[in-house]
Amino acid sequence: MLRGRERLGLLRPMGDALLLSGLHWGDEIRSSGEVAPPETELTEEEIEGALALMDTMTVDSVTELDVTDHYTEAFHEVIAAKAEHRAPKPVEAEAAPAGQVVDLMAALEAPVTDARERRGETSGGEATVHEMPTPKKKTPAKKTPATKTAAKKTTRKRAS
Image (cartoon, rainbow, N blue to C red; front, top):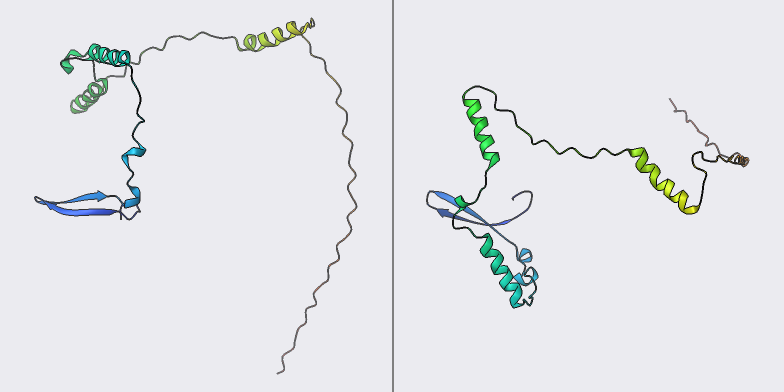
């Protein structure tokens, strides 16, 4: 059993240890044709373009790349700070560029004003209020009392 499921496994010795290899049931194995991409036709121009792109991105050594692993550097800094019994350097977050402040009411009123102008309405400000009709009160239907038959309880006296 592995993760609550019955699994096939091959247990074999390897040196001083036992090696367990997980196997698959027959219905778990799919043919590679199901996952293989469909065949496509490429033109010579597409192939040459792909090769040219790979040539421009190829480097002889990883050291030629200008990459920095900031996570590992920060991790080493935390380890060094703990070893020296001091607090690690605070993280210097990049300042997010200030966004444009939008007047929300002006943004909401602009499409309403445009729609009024397109319809030719000249009244601008106040909305008209209409009286809502009062709903008719429904009279509840008369309920007839349900007739229930009371079950009679009979008690038997024991003879002594």
